[in-house]
Image (tube, rainbow, N blue to C red):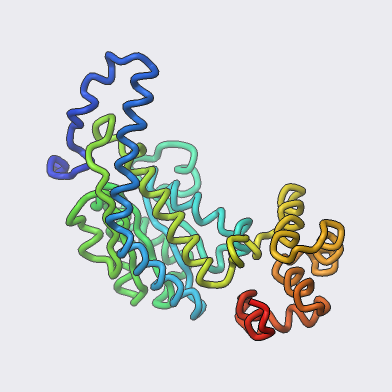
Length: 303
């Protein structure tokens, strides 16, 4: 059966790169870099749709739902990458953000190309994580037509979950199904059809926006500091100390003492420093304000 790809922007030949195999290494690198600059402009055009998707994610997570990324190949790997970074960066684990890739964990390190066609597997994978109408699913597919992603979207809609799509083509199949379609049109790839390049870069940047924007609105960031990070290694412990110093103006030794007293919970240490309260009171104040540091300080008239 013929798969109709000839109308997709991502499958067109790029007239600017047809002589790439004749270029010097430096010329080749500069050409790829010039092409990548189109990614920024393409994302700018999609910012209203990205913002709408962020607001939808926030509403679902505030009500106890989850953000679930779904994709195959590069798209799936990027979803897994973004989801896995939410725990160390924002203190948010799979209870709130997770990702599924066609072919399972093996597909993270090895090509499992046939997995993208397995529509039933998408349903089984989502059933295994107990997808419900409380959740919001983000289907990622450069072509906008990957069967695994399409099936996941349809199943999510059937259950009443909210849905986002992220594609690199216009009028995408997944975009016609999703509640919040995002289409970032980066044009023809440097190497024809190699969507790990511009399309993949665009996906990574949009996923950064989705997760970061969501966590900012959920109060996981104070000023521009990741105050809900999990300090699980020496680098992150040191980062936590520096954040308390930057947020409060206290000295390094005092910040270290407060962090230790707060079990290395940065938010609590900041509130302890700025309001001169103990750890128990800091946690009470944060709980009363949904964990938002700025709201705690506003009530104390310190913003």
